[in-house]
Image (cartoon, rainbow, N blue to C red; front, side):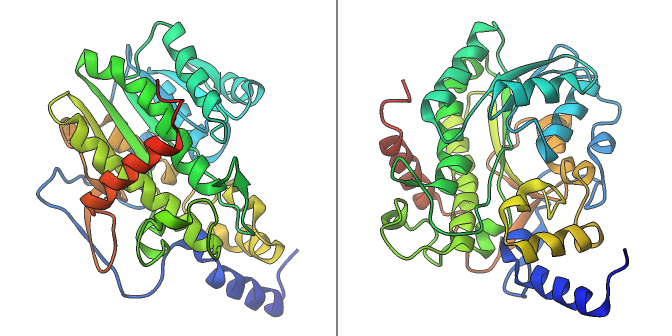
Length: 339
């Protein structure tokens, strides 16, 4: 049924307040294309199928986390469409099986509960048991709690799921990729990493909820962590033939708002189609970075709308010292699961 003027105003206000959905606003940050790296003709409205048109990925293996919905599902679908064997992970094997069965091409479902470090270890072991080594790893899965502090084994939930779970998984996947001397890792970060993270960046003394909790900052912290993970990994992978890059998919109409307050969910349902990308458009940047031949050898970059960008303004996305400290902290927090 049509919206009343009052409903429209309320919904617009709710979306305006939903910084954790849009991760945009204000003039503090300026984003410009980094022309020192290969630049594409694609942009915000490009789709995953468009950025991979003409590519034959036959014989390639890709692992995509969070394949059962949204960006992960579309990323898996397009990679399989282009001929890749896609290993698709879901929080349960049943979820992954359902998603994999619904796309054309070669797919293998895997269970991965990122809130459980042992599940990440087991997932990597399952990949090894298949006798395959990924050519592309797209660390796509993520959550936004929107609410009160939630701890899992004493660690803030978004930091654990969005970053630490992937940290464990990837550390187990990397050795065979490095031994082979090729591969790409794509970290799904966000503009939230520089617009919503705490002013000090990664507040290392608050990762277990020791201080005041702000859901928006916590989400931004987790996405900053993904960008810094990529940055430090790129340094560690130098000379191996394996690359690491971070991306912002854009504001995309997916199910990530399912746990948001009711007014925000309703607003996003009503207006999301007007201001947000479709999953087909949202998947484009990670698919471009994972597959485009022009990006062979490009590592340690950050991409928005299918192009490498430079962000000006007060942020920590390129803070190499913080990235190194984050890696060391992650090793301590996941001790016993890295092998």
